[in-house]
Length: 124
Image (cartoon, rainbow, N blue to C red; front, side):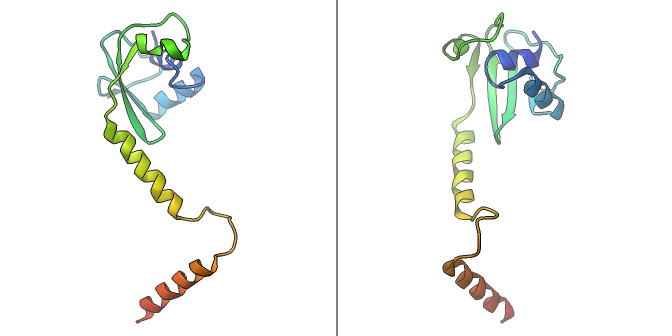
């Protein structure tokens, strides 16, 4: 089975086109080698998928005949993604929430004071 079709069947991508684009961009690796979308996947292969800044590591157990329901996915793959990958993503979320989003509006009084204090220390 093609790697893009496999990733679509086990619900890592919503459409086959998105899975194909991910393969072309180099976000998918089979046995630590970047692959084209047409590369065949066999049981026993290790597939690494880089999605949403997390590198998911999968072991192919079997090949499905068509797209699966979410409850049946574990019969066809084993997820061996380390916990550290998810923890790093949580830290990234916390760091992003500290900064204001672009276009939110004018700086608040607190923001303006921080900007002024930064400028004062820079001039000295």
